[in-house]
Each structure stands twice: as structure tokens, then as C-alpha cells.
Length: 83
View 1 (tube, rainbow, N blue to C red):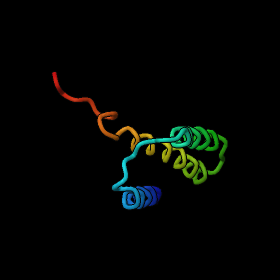
View 2 (cartoon, rainbow, N blue to C red):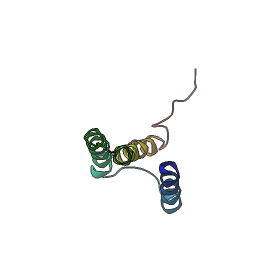
View 3 (spheres, helix red, strand yellow):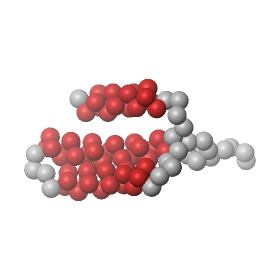
View 4 (cartoon, rainbow, N blue to C red):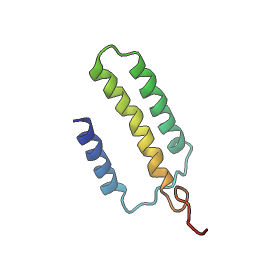
């Protein structure tokens, strides 16, 4: 179920921002994923319920996903095979 929700959010984001370049122009676009990753993981550590732990882990994974989207902008996330 968590995978379906993440895939739906990703598809909605691609549909809304699909034509816009993914370039962080402000510091918030770089800091918010870090906050999401730290808060999600720290909150997941304190949970007793397995379902809540998975929910907070999903918050952290959303931060990882956002950084992956930032890395695919142009050549920043890929190396050219010019050797």
C-alpha cells in the first residue's frame, strides 16, 4: 500500500512539474529534504507500532526521492562515458 501511495505522488508531481526544470533556486529546496530525512528516521526509531514506523520511514524516503530528482538535472547526476 505504501508503494502505491508513493508512486501516485511521484506521478502527480511529474504531471504538475513535468515541463519545469528541476533546479533548486532557493536554500529551502536543498534543506527541506534533509529535514524530511532526519525527522522521518528519528521519529521512526521511537515508534513501538510497526505501522507508524513504516509511515515515518516513508517520510524519510520522500526526502531521498526528492534528492534523486534534483540529481537528474542535466549532467549533475550522470557521468559521461567519454573514456
